[in-house]
Image (cartoon, rainbow, N blue to C red; front, side):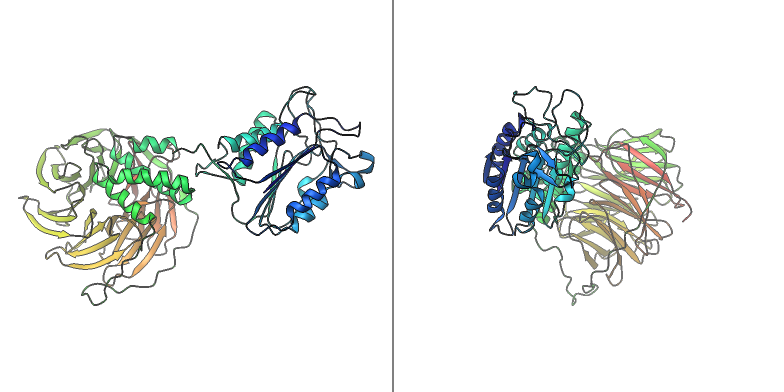
Length: 637
């Protein structure tokens, strides 16, 4: 419900006749009344006496319900009496008799405060004090602390200026049609949807105020709109009729590079959670489109998102009667929030293509990076590319890299459905094994004699490094994203996609010995150096540490976006995680965030896809889809 009051003709010769209010009220009424934008039921009063307006305001706030949204708008002169009390000037208002001819602000406040509506909005396009530049017409006469006059629960007040400023009609001379600076931007932000600053399809009061404030101050620096609110939660005032998918997401979805398409999913999911029905419909269509992507990793991740967005059950209980599987345990208390230290970079190194995974060589002198466009690279710490290791396929990405314990060989896994082993010194391929789909992860056994691979074909396999013979195959409930050997080589951990699980298997027999469950896609697994704990990273925005014997969840840390990678420090005391926007290092016992590895020169569309510790634990490397890797020095901790 909206009541718009505009007064621009005055019987008192001392009150300047105004030009803007009629156009202001008409323009605002049109946009509020539009069912596609705001859908208000609008009543407009123009040049009415104070008793008529007062009666209409009383009726307006009477018999409202709790869920009603009411908006009262006034444009015209604001006046004060000798005691500083505010009056809204009507057509019959006399400056020498404000008490009996003006509309007292206190009465409006009482009417609002007595109204049952939980969302009451008052918009005042009038001013209360201050000088004004020559050549502009002000709609007030002297100082008045307006916001202080309107207080109460469920009330939000937007004013065209603060207590010491005038609001302005513009540069037009008397008698010319002109809307005020404040209302003009108010209407524009609602009409074309530009006030929807977070692009979620809805325009809230906070967004509308921020939009109008910035544009008014930019056009008229002397005028600063103000807002006071006593409403819990957000108040949606209108819909963005011109909403479209943000450009960076559209470009990511249309990218020929799978890693960039994959990076769009987090932004799409955020829009789905925060957007209105129209936004959710478009976003669902786009995620469904990605679920049919040619890249198995992209399609699997999109399918996982679709499942989670449908609100399906997220926890799969483990049968207690099954041998080797732990019963469900109570959810632990999340780690307490703690301010993290921001680390300075040692180096930022450009790589040929966007990166998907990174690792140090055992001696710490080189970095291996899995990249898009069929290549992996071995990079010196100076930034020089030592070897370019090329896979086959059309535009298949390399998704994983892993050094043998002695550092003499490097394994890679690719979208061309192969895993390959290379001589790290010469860059020569020495072995190739194949799956039926993308190889998402590779890992050498601790003795270097076996290679484990995880694939989108729903299998993890173990190969003999010398002969290439397949030694073991295990099949999970969905596509396999990551694989890791335990430090003693006796067990194998895998991360699943659609079934949201991480599993531990006997590396000799293939028997499943443990299963743990997240609320979404599990992207990464890592054993602690002593083999007693398993770390997992998930798109449910958490990384967790589990007891490998009982399956009990020991620790949970939460990031602001989906987790892509997790790694233990060599001493097992710390945990590194890579998420969409950044990377963090946590205390692996308490869950305190110790260090934030931020990348300030890169925008939020760039994702962190991998993180790894050096063998001495003193350095950390991260890789980004911006085609850069970053080195960080850790202090003594």
